[in-house]
Image 1 (cartoon, rainbow over the protein chains, first blue to last red):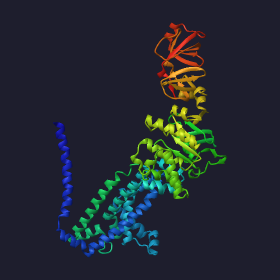
Image 2: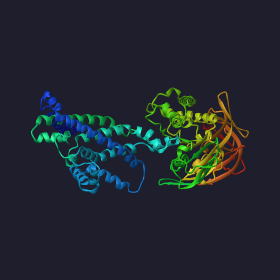
Image 3: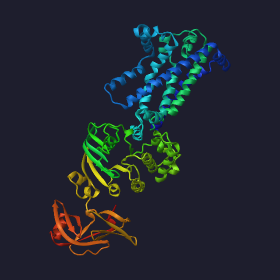
Amino acid sequence: MRKMKFKFFTLCFTLLLTIFILAVIFCVATHTTFSALITSIMSKEIQFAIKLSLLTSIISTFLCIIISVPASYALARYKFIGKNFINTILDIPLALPPLVAGVGLLLLFGTTSFGKALSSIGINFVFTTLGIIVAQFFVNISFMLRIMRSTFEGINPRYEYVAKTLGCSDTQVFWKVSLPMSKAGLLAGSIITWSKAIGEFGAALMVAGATRMKTETLPISLYLNMSCGELNLAISVATILIIVSIVSLFVFEKYGGTARLY
Amino acid sequence: MIEVRGLSKDLGEFFLRNINLDIKNGEYFMILGPTGAGKTILLETIAGIYRPNKGKMFMDGKDITYVPPKDRNISMVYQDYMLFPHLNVEQNIAFGLRLKKIRREVIKDKVEKSSKLLNIYHLLHRYPSTLSGGEKQRIAIARAMVIEPYALLLDEPLSALDTQTRDRLRQELKRIHSISKATIVHVTHNFEEIFSLADRVAVMNEGRIIQVGSPDDIFRKPNCEFVANFVGVENLFKGRSIIEDGVTRININGVDIFSTNQKSGEVFISIRPEEIFLSKEPFKSSARNSLKGKVEKILNSGAIAKITVDVGIPFNIMITKQSLENMELEEGIIAYITFKASAVHIF
């Protein structure tokens, strides 16, 4: 009897939490009518925000993949001096508040001679689309790195040894064995990174600012329209962001679980 | 010929110390040793996965110490198969061939031949995750053999399999070796594999090679206590076995022994000392084997005495100290030994 009571007690918490989360999403999704939602989404401003968000998030996710795959492979496979130290440093962006990351990036690209040198050859990060991309990249790279590192660590190195004895060079081993075997982890990591990039606000706000129709990504648009009372526009953006998150979560759950199968 | 000279490698937990080996072309060479002896890293170092800290390796006289694995043409099979999960069976077997610039038809032909040799032709389009352990190991062997390696390294290839599959695959390894004449280096901790497969055996412990010789040498003339204790087989004989009317008779130097095991030809047999009765008079019983001989040696070591009786071949028998006193045995007298046919183990 007591056991039953305890089960009921704990289940109540689970249930309450579920209701709370559903209520939040429900409020956003049902705030306006469907037709008003479509009209808002078709508006010039939201179309711009969608396109800018897609562009920046795809590029930053792509950069995360390009950089994290070789870096995480090195961390998973090789022994070198200072590995622990480097591992800790590479995890920092994960723990850093995005606003702080944004301030750091702003200072690096805006005030140092490195940043000035870049801007003198036309590569400008401050208050530009490039700034959004670099902000998304900085905030997400550690995350991608961690997923890929544990994916590579999960592959028994003997697969690679066998491939070598069959005639593969180190590079061929990577392309023909290690990478195909980490497909699931790579897919899961990319999806979740992309979804986080779409929702990135704090760091991007600091580096690229919130200029309507210029650096207006979906979250920035949500912020701008909320602050000036354009509720319908804000809600339409929120709805899009909810859909992106839920779909990504679903894909991640489906493929992320098999990432360490081998 | 693969020559290993003064090879040392330190990987922390596992290590090799001053390894010297000569593995002849076409030889079935086995490495025997307890867990943690360094058997696997010896194979991996021969394959070129690790660079030795010290020592050299030669292949047909050519120094291969620093040649990368891909250029050695030495392939490897692990206990847990290591089949590439993202490739089907055919792609797994063809993996090594596709890396070489070989025409598609030739690859297809070779894959077909080797898969037929290993009875896995019907599995070519399946994926590894759907196969049994025995099937996976056949594929792993086919994948390693199809590139026609200079040497094939097998790391406990039969250990993960159930008894029946293991016996069958062991027979196939023997058949494949006799067909292909490949040089095989096979790591094991199973004595039966040694007697049915090995031309020569190396016993390894704590990163060192302790003894190298024919299976017969290792088991009969262990060169140190470790080998003697590790291989620890008493009453081991080599003979010719004939099966007549369902009864197996093994002739060893003119002495006939009967067994319930069915195996003919050149065999090894062993009888555990505690399965043998010793008597001063002929012992009438249902046991098939009863032999007359002379007590040659009595080794009294505490509670148990070891008696050696020569019946044409020397048998060791264990009896308690009490029995030794009651029987009034002494060296030189006539005695009879008796054991059941089911106590005679053939391999």
